[in-house]
Image (cartoon, rainbow, N blue to C red; front, side):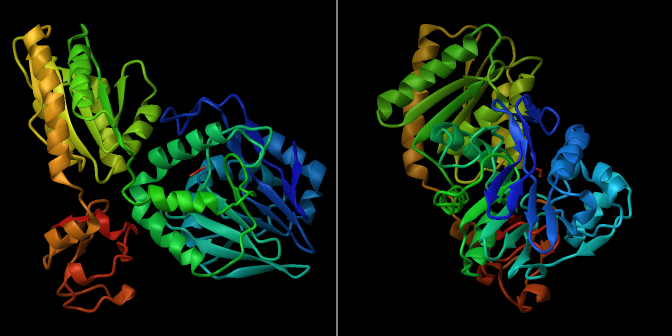
Length: 464
Ligand code: FEO
C-alpha cells in the first residue's frame, strides 16, 4: 500500500498486522507494527530505510513498481537494526553499487549484520546531500537513541524529519497519520514504546531534542520508522518526549506480584486497601505478573510514582516472573520512583529480602524493609498489610524526590563511574573532548555532559 506522504515523498514500507512479538519475544505488539520506508523522488532519488527481513522480497518487488531500482541514487540507512535494514541484502543484490549513507557506527552495525562491504558513505551531524529541486537531506546523529548508530534525516523544503525509531510506536494502522488514527490507541502505544525502549536513554533524549530545537528548523512532519506519521502539530510528540524524559511520574502506585496459593495476592489487596484509606486520590493498579503482559506492566511502572513488588518465598527465593521483572527494571533505569517489597512464606523466608535488595540495586528509593505474612495470611496479617499500605503513603510523603541536583551533590568532587560502560570521570583530568577542564568537580560539569564512551547522560553516573 504505497502512498504519498507529501509532495514527492512516497511511503513504501510494510504494515505488519500479524506481529505480536518484537525483539524476539521481548516486546509485545498487541496492535502489530509497521516498518516505514520512504522514497524521495526529486532530481535525485533517495530511499530512506527499508523493512524487516521476512518482507524483503515483497518490499523490493513493490519498490520496483514505484521506481526503476537502478534509478535510486542514494540509500539512507538511519539505523542498522534489522527491522529497518533487513531488506538491504535483497535490494543490494539488484543495485550493488548504490551508495548507502549512514553514520560510522551504522557502517559497523550493517557490516556486523550482513558481512557485506557495500558502498558506505559515512556522514556526521550537519552533513548534507543535495537532491536537486532546491532540496537537501541533512543528517543528524542520534547516538544511543537507541543504538550507537542511530541518526535522523531532515528534508529541507518539505520540512520533514525522518526520525527513525524516535517518536515511533509499534502500531499497524490503515490511517498512517496522527490526525486520522484513534488518539487513545496512539497514546497507549507511544508511552509503551518510550517506557520499554527509551527510558534508559532519557538524559540523551532531552539533550538531543534541545540540540535539534536549537537549529530552529521548521518541522512540518515527523516521519517515523514505526507506526504513524506526525503531521498534525508534529512537535506534540517532541514535547511529550521531553516530559517523559524528565523523571516522569503520574499520581499512581502500582502493585506487581506473583502468587502460588493466593496468599501474596491477598497481601497485595490488603496493602492496596491501606493505600486507598490513606490517599483517596492516588490511582492504584494491581497486576499478577503470571497473567499480565510484561511490557504493559513496565509501562505502568513508568507511569507510577511508587511500586510495590510481591512474591511468596519458594526455596528461599522469589518466583521467576518477579525476578525477571526486577532484572528488566534494572536495565530500564527508572528514576525518581519509590518502592517496597511484600510477600508470604511458610517455613522459611527470603523473597522479600531479595526483592528489597534488587529494588535498591535497580535505583528505586526503597522506603522500608517490606512485609511478609506467614502461610496463608490471617485476618491479623491482612490488617498488618492494610497498616503497611497506610504507612507506605506516609513514608512516601516524607521522602521527596531524587533529582539530578541531589545526585550531583552526592557525587560532589570525587571520581564518577558510568553505570552503563564503567568509564570513569576523574576530576583531576576533566574531559577534554567536551571542554571540561582538568580540576573540574563533578558538580560543576554541565548537565549536558555525556559519557564519551557510551553517550549516557550525567544522571547515569554514580560515585566510583
Ligand atoms: Fe526499529 Fe531500533 O529498530
